[in-house]
Amino acid sequence: MFDTVLGLPLHPLVVHAVVVLGPLAALLLVAYAAVPRWRAGLRWPTVACALVAGCAAVVATEAGEALAARVGEPGFEHEERGELARTALLILAAVTLVVVFLVARVEAATARVGVALILSIAAAVFATGAVALAGHSGAKAVWTSVIDSTSGS
Image 1 (tube, helix red, strand yellow):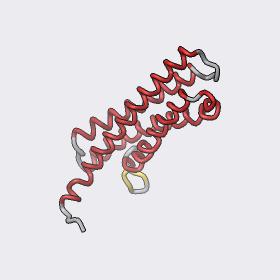
Image 2: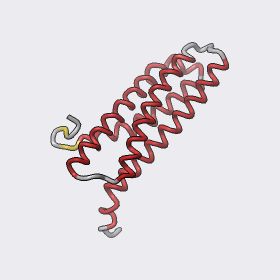
Image 3: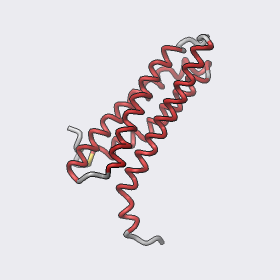
């Protein structure tokens, strides 16, 4: 199910959604928590982006396992970092729902806004960092041997 789409491996296709939507969801969440006047307009795009990024991360992990079974393991580092990115994006999605609940009203209590902002920043940093580490290790696994076997122009 998570192996190929139209003859192409699903993993690198879905990974692009994770790499774009994960950091975007993190940015939207921090903006939502930090800027009260933006909350009404950002609420549903933030929730949707975080949920889609989390789902894409789950699909990317499953597709990565299917790809590894087909062509061989990419390396322990990438597999571990990919699982960390999946976990981080699922946490980001959960934190997004909590933050939206905490500060749904523009005039939310200051303590609630402070907690929401701290949660948002922590989840955003964790998710963005985990996605960057997983992406970098995956790119190294794919491209290092290709680059090493060619000469620069």
